[in-house]
Image (cartoon, helix red, strand yellow):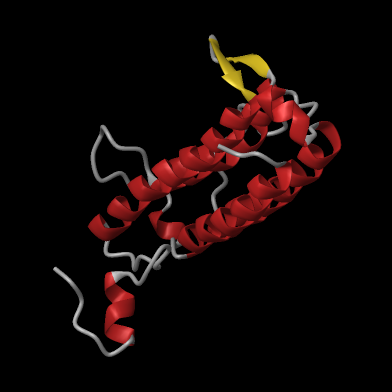
Amino acid sequence: MFRTIQDFIELWKSEADSTIKIFSNITDDKLDNKVSENIRSLGRLAWHITQTLTEMPYKAGIVDKDDLDELPVPSSVKDIVDIYKKYSEALIKSLEKKWTDKDLAEVIDMYGQKWEKRKILQVLITHQIHHRAQMTVIMRLQNIPVPGIYGPSKEEWTQFGMTPQD
C-alpha cells in the first residue's frame, strides 16, 4: 500500500505507459472482435480500463464528475489512447490537489465496503493490470503482437536474437 501520494504517482505513470503500450498494439479492425461470447472484446476491455479513470476516482472524491460514464466504446484505438492519456493525467492533477499523504489512512465507503484511501489507489493500479493481462491473452488468440511489459514478450525475445521461451 502507498504511504505517499508521490509513491502512487510514480508507479501510476509507469503502469499508464504500459497500458498505452498494450492499447497501441491493437488495430482498429480488431477492436470489436470477440474470441468467445463469454469474453469481452479488446475494445471493450480497453474502454473499461479507460472509464475506470473517472468512475472510481469520482466515487472516491478525487474528481468532481464521472465524465466517461455511459459513453460508448470509441471506434478507433487512437481515440481510446488519447482519452486514456487525458484522464490519466487529470487523475494525477486532481489527486495532488484533493488528497494529502495524511488522507491515505482515511476510510471511506467504496462499492459497499470500507476502504482506506490508499487501497483505492492500489486498486486503480491492480485493476488495470488485471485487465491488461486479459487483453494480452486475447491479443495472442488474434495473432496481435504483445509488447513486453515487465520483461520481454515472446516476440521481443526473437528481436534480441534469443530463443523465445515456451
